[in-house]
Image (tube, rainbow, N blue to C red):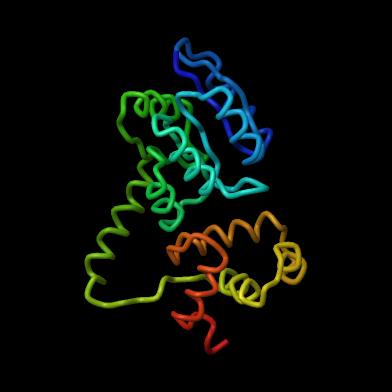
Length: 215
């Protein structure tokens, strides 16, 4: 029996995934959580075989959850279920130890296949994710001789500027008229793109790479 835990703050999506899995004879759903804190608590108390993990959790990024659990439970299989198809998110999660990555538009058949594949010790990525990773590898080969700053969107640059100004997540959300959750998503993307671990690293990289000059 494959024990599965779902970490996703969208209740309807989590319940939808649950409904897809409950009919499978070799699957046992051990629980669901909508926050990073609850996910860590439940997984520590009752470790599953496979964790279905969203990146965009309200209290802490799924990236941090992945990092923590990879260190604490090296045998745990982590399958990312995300709406983010950008290379920065994918490579960051893989670098943190996730063994699989699916987009949220995947169907039941592929989801079940991915779970069963991870349990055998193999990795699994949907075709779109594989294509993104391959394009990134090809680009890195052609650009290997030149040092290029990471590509940051206009909105990410706005968030980065306010982080450098020591604004809180709440203050950034209010100034840019976006939700705090969206701010945290942009922060997670910046961490992945700049290859740093925390806010101090973001500020240091922004200054070293002169990312905010010319604004």
